Image (cartoon, rainbow, N blue to C red; front, side, top):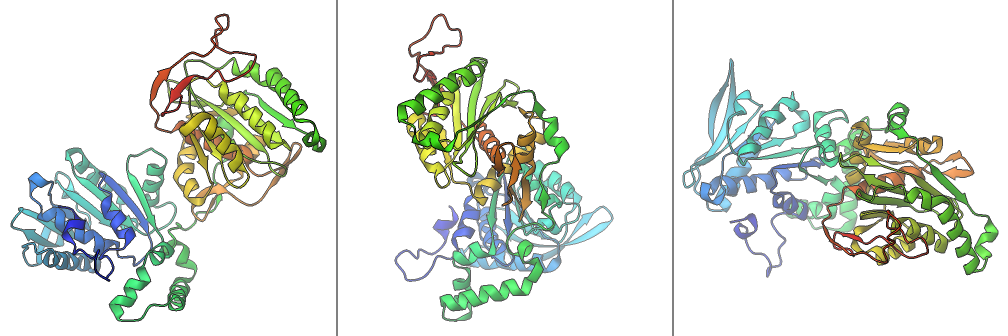
Length: 512
């Protein structure tokens, strides 16, 4: 029986749910490794205690198991075990009284608190430190305020061993610096280096989902928006300079350039960067003349490069949109059998009309062998081109509205690709500058607001975003399910129809 079935049904009553939405979302995630970066005093431990009681009270045949809660001080331990006792009474589960005991860890004697459930034979054991004899035990391990534990790396190793036999590790913490093992764990999961799930709840998010209303209910105060705003301001004022880390989930000391020049240059290879800038009057040409001009350029500059692509490799692409001030950059990706991603060429368009941007994009993407997907900047005016590509190629096109959430979910993996030598990009000074413009800002790897001057105009990290979008597209889960030749050219080993029209006929992810 899950938590929702155990809690009172409030659907027909004028009372709120027992748990707030973010608490429900935390308990709903039941993967082997689940991590949450959180603000102070958001009630995650209190909610976790509810789920732990249900788990320990369940029979083994129903998935029940022991729970080991590890805090970094005794006060947290006592608060947690008291919450477990409260939930056990609420769920009407027979449980023993809170028991104090001693856990021997070599020459150390560690004080423990526990609750037993006679019906299932399982226990909840709360510890004030992390004993080495956690190894060999089985069940769920909850590491609370993990960033403040000593030797967190060693405890994680011991706890992760439980996953082999069907256990679970849940890691809850506020941040304690960018170099802390807790933050490293989060970045590894987001980069795809370690399997797991990361959730995030800031103080502002918690308040938006009803935290202050719950405070008012508990204190018997009447809620108002003005009172909520004043309360939030007081909390931020109380934490002062520490508010970013304590309340906004931004690890301290997380500012500065994201990737060194040496790292970026080490991943650069000889590959062309095609740059095309149109004069202002080009916009006023007749449409047929504009199309003819760009078609000639595509066939002269792009087609020879596209014919060099390996027809057996998967391909993807990324695109960052610009019209007048910024560039439009198109970055095709070829994915090798060794899973290394190679960018065979880059295309940069400056001052290019919308229709001709579409023309260049379609010319390239139509001819990418085994297209698995693309990710396109759909922010602002970029939404037009991304939508047009979605209509043409279907659901394999991600229309991305760039945001902190997108950067947080995708940029760690992009940086890891450089660090792990899984990416090759064109050797180019302006591309290097764009990638060096990526910074850690408020704990998130993204572009700053500053622009650089290079080549034939200003830049705003345009190539970096196109490359990041393209790499994100290579990580899409796709399934190839069909191949249907269209107007094959038996004399062309690459399968190109050089006259016109799409020739990319391989389908992936439900796209034909």
